[in-house]
Length: 262
Image (cartoon, rainbow, N blue to C red; front, top):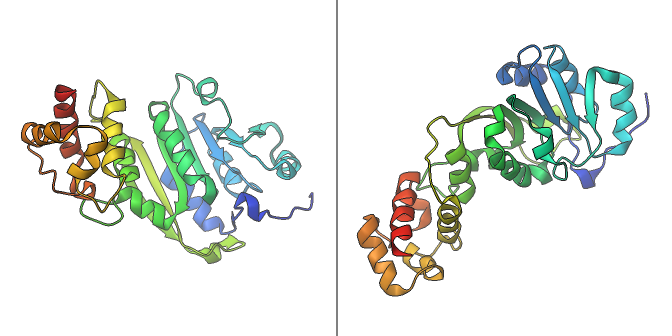
């Protein structure tokens, strides 16, 4: 097999525990002939287990030194896309058939991948990913906690989220400095239907712009003081609160009232 040296610049921490790999695939519930994406297959420990399900597997790999390793191991059993997944044309890659993602994500692309997944949330039936434990906890967090923020709200708006299990550093080569976690994301069937999503997310982003400030202060970037008073009256939400104190429904009430005031 071709000799390979891991690259710090790509955040390569390869899983080495086959029991964890089996657990990930079991959680992902991959069916025969199902379309599956793996992002960052590395040397292929998860790839090998996924192929045991007889799925149709597409692997995205950015590191050209890994291409011969993956091709030697798997040949035409996988579709290998030799490209940065963030630069790939997802519109051309998704189809009418729902896709599953099963991946040990490189740490430094976690956030941009999550935003890509949000953008194409309707294209996936289930997403099972391993990410930093801290990020997993933030995604799953509830209002009135320090971890709760715009990313929590955005992920929970689009997905039902389940924290599956924790993975310790010693299960990787080389070991990362933090714990990892496997989470499942299932597109929400009860996702709120908003006619002007850009306005809704503008409100959310402005609200969390400065976490320490009250909403009325942050909303000065959107409305004049008189309209902020009206926004509180119409929405019924106390704008002396901070963004981290608001639920999804609270933000929807503010959004609806904001549209009436524009």
